[in-house]
Length: 225
Image (tube, rainbow, N blue to C red; front, side, top):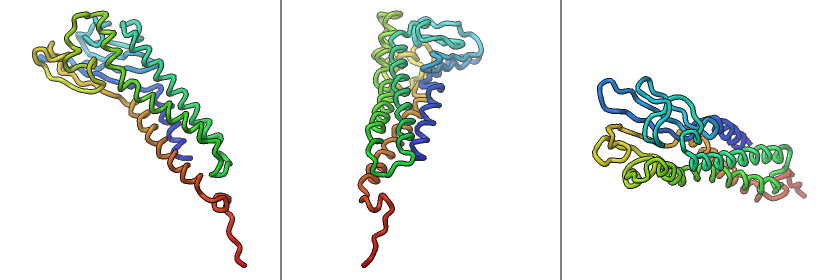
C-alpha cells in the first residue's frame, strides 16, 4: 500500500511540475542563458536575464520571457498533446486513489482492486509515453505554420527528438544560429515515469499475494491431530 501511496503523491506533484525543458546558451561574452519549460497547466515558461523578447517567433525558434499559454505562442498541436496527457494523469490519479480505497481492510485475494490498478497503470504509462513519442511531431507541425521551409526537421532539434543536444555549427538544427542547446524531459515527466515503474512493481506484488492459499491469506493456522 505504501508504494501505491507513493504513486498517488508522484502523480499529484507532476500535475504542477514542468514536463519538458529547453536550454539555450548563445555565443558571445555577454550572452545570457535562456531556459524554457513546458507544463500542462502553465504552458510555456521562459527565463532570460536580458535580450529576450516577450514572445518568440516560432516554437522554439527563440527565447521567451515569462509564462504564456501554448496557444498564445502558436503551439496549438502541442497544447492538444499536453491536454491529453494531463487527462491521462488525472485518470491515473483517480484510479490510484480508488485502488487504495478498495485495498483498505480487504483480504489479499480480493480481486476487485485489479481492474482499477490496471486502469491506473495503463493511464500512467500512456501519460509519459505520449509526450515522449509525439511531442517532436506536434512541435514539427507547429513550426511548419511559422517556418514552412524549415530544415530543422532533418537536423538536431526538439522537432526531431524528445531529448537531445547540439553545438553551434552550420546547418546544425537549432544550433545553426549560434545557440548551444539542450532539451529533454523535466521533473514532472520523470515523476510520471517513476510512478509507472512503481505501478508495475505493485501489480506484481498484488498478483503474488493473490496466489496465496486461502488459509494463509486469512492467517489461519492448521490445527494438528
